[in-house]
Structures are given as structure tokens and as C-alpha cells.
Length: 257
Image 1 (cartoon, rainbow, N blue to C red):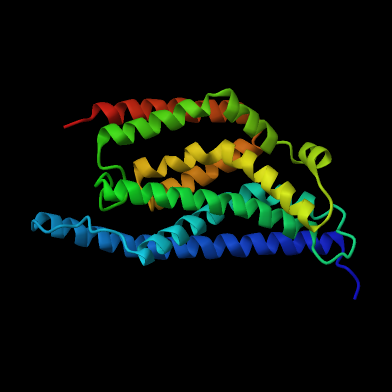
Image 2 (cartoon, rainbow, N blue to C red; image 1 turned 135 degrees about the horizontal axis):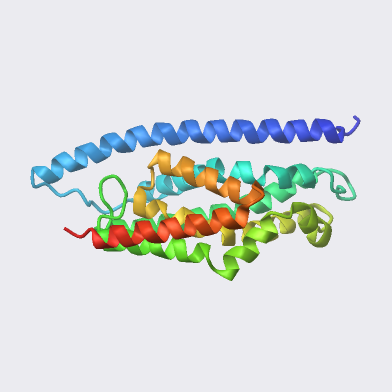
């Protein structure tokens, strides 16, 4: 059987990414509705003097991990699509069994799955410390303010700028870092994923301040990530977003009743 042409491969990748995004967002909407109902029940329980911060079970931990993983797919898939399309044109391994874009995508996904695990543990810790509201946002204005200020300051750091510069140059990255073979493409995806994580982790942390399943913020952050990586004035966008987060964090920190 003939190998698919580059054009067919690009169409397949685009279609796959589109389906993944749609399914991820459908799942997020479904989860958001379920958790909104649960939050309303928890608020009612609190008003009645009943305990609502019950300890997590293992199923709770796994479901939260799945939620974060789905969220990361929905948020990061659009910005990694150009890199996947370029990776599709890279040479295959000697036997031609593993398309380069597949190996690259697996490596990239592993990084964000790892981040989802860390985020799950952080959410668990905040829940156990009773620092999350029923809507899964920081219940303390000081904590929420610190998260926003920290994320905003990170946007202004040289590390953020270096990672963003890397993510905005997919052709340069593939020309200088591509490794052939099945394992090589996975390692390349891991390498790029680390830079992408360095670029975006602080923005993901903002969800702990505004609500982990706040879909308006999830969508806004996903758009910001995409604009940072593709817009001509990415540096200005990144710094402006950082300044806005710092201001919002200060306002949140000072709004203590």
C-alpha cells in the first residue's frame, strides 16, 4: 500500500486535531454543568451547617486527573497544530511504521499529561486545606491574588520570553532539534513540550484563582496562548497580559472583607 501524500497527511492531522478539540470542549461543558450542580448543592449544605469538604477518594483523584487532561487537550491542541503539520513532513523511521507527527504528538502529550498530574495533586492539596470554594476557585482573596500576581510576573520574565520565542519558531526548532526514528520523534515532542510548558504553565495556574472549570476563563486563556504563539506582536500581548494579571491580583488581594 502506498504511503499517504504530504497533503493527505496534513488533512488527516488537521481533522484529528479538530475532532479532539470538539470532543474535549464537549466533555468540558458536560463536566462544567455537573460541577455547577454539585457546587450549588455544596453551597446549600454549607448554609444548612453541613460539612462539604469531604476527603477525596481514589475515584475522585482519577476523575480530576482526567478532567485536567481533557482540559489541556482542548486548550493546547490549537497552538501545537502548526508544529504537528511541519513534523508530518519529517523523514520516517527506517521501517516507515511510525509517522513522525504521531511520535511527536505522543511526546508532546506526555508533557501535558504530566502537568495534569501535578495540577491534580495541587487541587487535592487545596481541597484538603479547605482553600477551594464549591466552584473550585481560591476561597481566600489573598491566595487568589497571589496566584494572579505570580502568573502576571512570570509573564514578564526572561524565561517566559525565551520559551515563547522557541514556541513561535517551529521551523527553526525542527531544523535544529529534530531526531529521526520512532523514539527520536517522541523525544523531539518531549523537548518541544517542555518549552511549551515553560511558556504556558503560569497561565494554566490562573484557573486556581478564577475557577478550575470556569469555561469563560478556560476559553480566554486558550485564545491568549494561541495569540501569543501566532500573533505578530506576541511580546506585547504577553507583557500586556502579565501586567493585567498583576493589577487584577492586587485588586483581588486587597478586596478582603
